[in-house]
Image 1: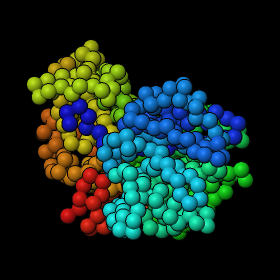
Image 2: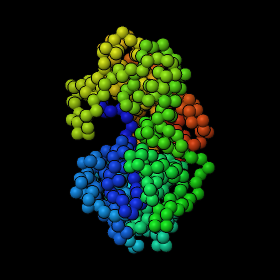
Image 3: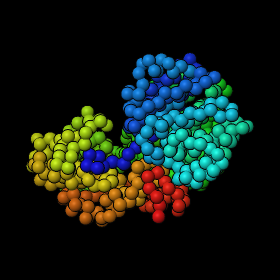
Image 4: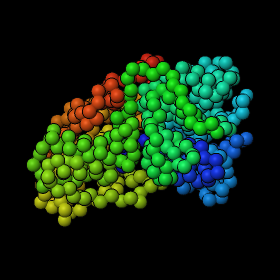
Length: 467
Ligand code: SF4
């Protein structure tokens, strides 16, 4: 891809239990705040205590919902989802929340993450007579909950969790309960908030801020949080003795105004920049960022070294999903459409450019050339993450090792390839040191290949198949 060299986000989920409130509209605003986590489809399900109503479609949140639609979604609780497809195709059929009828009533589910044993469970369920309407792993989850909920939905969830493997943050809604679930490793974020008497469960705390709610705490790994007319209760399944929170949430995916597992994302990103400055203290005149993903770390670098941070690249913020990709003859135009250098800032300057990550390395060379054409006399690049060497099996679209430039070339070769005067990636030790925590709190598998949740050798996972 010439236009974007970023891993794709996963999904955003937002649930609210709020009798007396306009729960559909609050969910709409919550999903708006989570739009960065998925732009392919959006949906909201509401329950009035008797039935669950659902509206979902392909598109951004404001494209899927009109005022009329929101007015028709009345109830005492709601569940919203915004999706980027990590498993299953980008089809309306695969949009979430999923909703189904089962022997005890109705159930709706929104999922963020990726299971690694879906194929095995799906085959077994199909052999036993289950039918599936979609190709997504989330349908396996809802099928298992429905199948095991003869005594109670909580019981069904625990049995489902004993069977599935992988990364999952879920919000489940029955006619009378809103339930938040985080996998036993806590790979994907999920937090709980309070808005007056109402409770909210959301992927990121920025969604709570947006609707005026207060962050109470994160859902713990392996925890099941149940909100009903009795208030909030919680139970846990056995969790491993390590956590594996996705460290990429802090590097790129989550919004800087979110707080995840007690860490302020903005502060973490600034520290990444400061650490880069300690690891690579090069003499330059200005520090610039590839906006917006590199901005906070670039400011951190500039602060640490006492060098001016400048906006050397202007981002066009009006390029949406419907942008027509330029053909081969216009490849260079694609980058310039999105980012244009400001000559008066760059001319005759030694420049350090910061970005959060390099996946395929397809745009970096063009960026370096653009800066030189705009008059920069030296161009150094700093990356606020370690080299990405391994695919992600837990819900991020980093799928093929052959596409990862750092898996194919050593750093010095990448530097030559992109034509920079210097290139430095943040060290893994430097990254982990920012959290001041033992290594076993985070998943760092795409950097070191240390997968916290074993990948079955024969399992087809997302868009790739293991050898
Ligand atoms: S492999 Fe990388 S992107 Fe995937 S969950 Fe682990 S840290 Fe996150």
